[in-house]
Image (cartoon, rainbow, N blue to C red; front, side):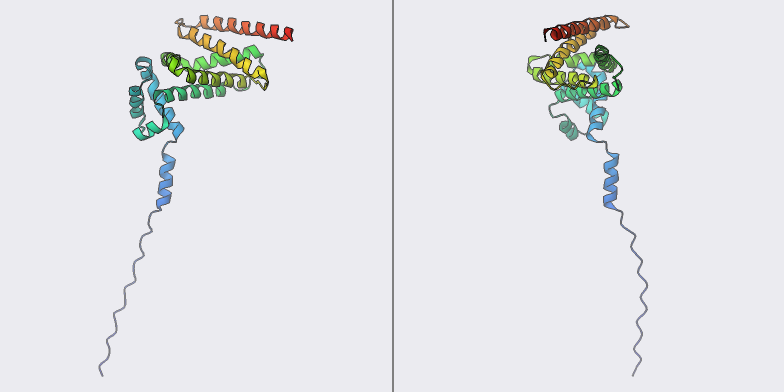
Length: 223
């Protein structure tokens, strides 16, 4: 009986190289991709130099999106109402920046707090003053009046909160209504102030705040 030949010994299988962690790569990709706010800020930054000449239009938004490297699908999602959404974000960004710069105002008188808040917001808009003027002009149109009123309320509310206002009664609304008049008229004066030091705007603001304080004194006496 012939010997049964032995089977050749199997070569040890090489261990497969570990597969790349797909989930980890996806997570890293998500981290490297800018979030919605960063994309909005990039589009805003790209739009402001052009808005001074082109105004806030659909063409401007598309141009700014391309310069900021934001895909068209993301652009449509981030700015659902087109250039109006861009203006709304611009206003909100300026409000947030104003609150950040103001910091703690407790050591100042109330009129000084409000004056500083108004001047600070205008200073934030100053590098692109003409673009800010074009945005204000667009919001002044009758079809955009509701959005203009909403953004004005948000701005003056941010100013009063930065000034330390904690009122919850009827004064809450009267203060914001009065300040809306002060800020709105001062901004219009500022848009037309071509002087280097903008002294005329500062004097105008001082006079408007003095009017408000006189009104508050009369109201207190009436009570």
